[in-house]
Image (tube, rainbow, N blue to C red):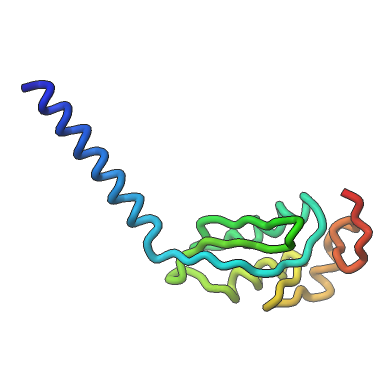
Length: 118
């Protein structure tokens, strides 16, 4: 009898975890944007800036200059995410960084000059 209770408990736990996983991935979208940057410092800054409320994951690809974001559209949107990235100094295909924000970037991260060596 004890073994049956343990087995049923394990099965119930597995079903609960599966149901929770599908709920977490429900109502999220994945979008990819072109975002300017140069190096690993840029990657960290861009990903941190993109991580606004509602964003589950942000990943910037240095070689492709693309930012992939997984987020809940009920909590945020493209414009909010990319405005935050632009405020950090990095322009995207939809929102350009202000000159004042761009000029705050370290010299190697100023992507308009193409002088980064790392």
